[in-house]
Length: 436
Ligand SMILES: NC(=O)c1ccc[n+]([C@@H]2O[C@H](COP(=O)([O-])OP(=O)(O)OC[C@H]3O[C@@H](n4cnc5c(N)ncnc54)[C@H](O)[C@@H]3O)[C@@H](O)[C@H]2O)c1
Figure 1 (cartoon, rainbow, N blue to C red):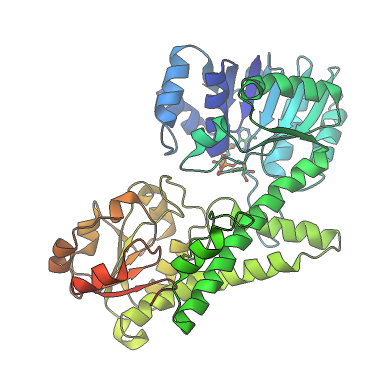
Figure 2 (cartoon, rainbow, N blue to C red):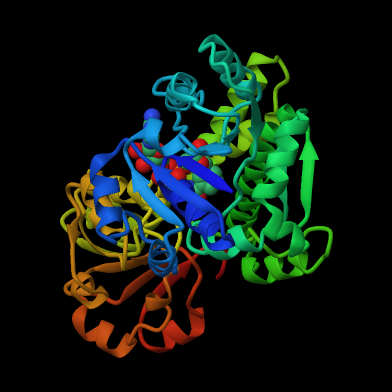
């Protein structure tokens, strides 16, 4: 079938490429001319493992194309996906739906055949109703349905998750919508991926509830880690001990510098705004948001402490290894490293950094940080090293070489990727999260 994907960012491009790989004909549309120009030249605008190969293979077989022309791109589509950004609105934390509504208006003006309009962007409850109203107002003569199909892919392993999802959620009360979505996901039906049909409002809420729950799990283990430090327990053991309980599960129980990325921070805030609007507070998520916000800056202070306190830290040099909010992505949106770097720079610390994929985007967010070409260049002359992101490249640093290069051998491991005894045996002062 013919699919149009409006918005060719992390979600739109991965989804479009995977749909094309299933055998559909996909047009990826974006208003960003540079992005589309690069895609046409075979250059990926984002880093996602396996994406370049998947896109190239489907370009070659003629199943995926790229355009900035929305009217031309949706002309023959039976399913038109909206996969544009829904960032936090400046000032109040509500999801900014202006991009979604702008696409809906444009689609309404250009619709040339019957089609299902599918919201893949993460949108608050009731957004589908508004998209439907916009399409009705456009007075199109064509039959349409508005469906919610939230996306659960994980950056860094997005293709695998898209093709083998834990579940697919489709929110629609329309028979037409249901039939078209069944065809879209037919290859996954055949694969026995669980597909849930729900009301549109339930589908919209499922996405926020899922992200808020995961953010809560992370924040829970982060606070348990703080307690571990105070009582002399080891958070790694505690995490294994609770995570092996099937009712709890081991994922999202790794203590760290706080959650970040393009989804959890904005989605928890947006959920709170919905809860506020409907006078149905979700106090647990309120606490999570607050705890995570303070944690990021507290991590900066942890590094300052490792340097001997605020006075001693001034003028010293810290090497940050990792900048992205998690490995295998170049996504810098709301990465906790931004707050940590800012805290250090505010306190007169010089920061050098290395990240395998994130430096290009990080530059604009961390003007005072010196970016380097490899981890050892960042480390040279440092008074402390912080591991901010658990990239594989940092798991087996040559500690003897590191020791030669640094000014003082201090390692602050905010991802717990090293064994304390091993690092200390090499003469390092070592601190991590929730471990003695
Ligand atoms: N990134 C993730 O891991 C992830 C996972 C699940 C859900 N989501 C949700 O998916 C949505 C998209 O996220 P993303 O990370 O792909 O965002 P993104 O910023 O990477 O991509 C959005 C794209 O939409 C384009 N765009 C904006 N307005 C447009 C218009 N009028 N016409 C055509 N193109 C337009 C932008 O140029 C941009 O390329 C968000 O709602 C997000 O919350 C993201």
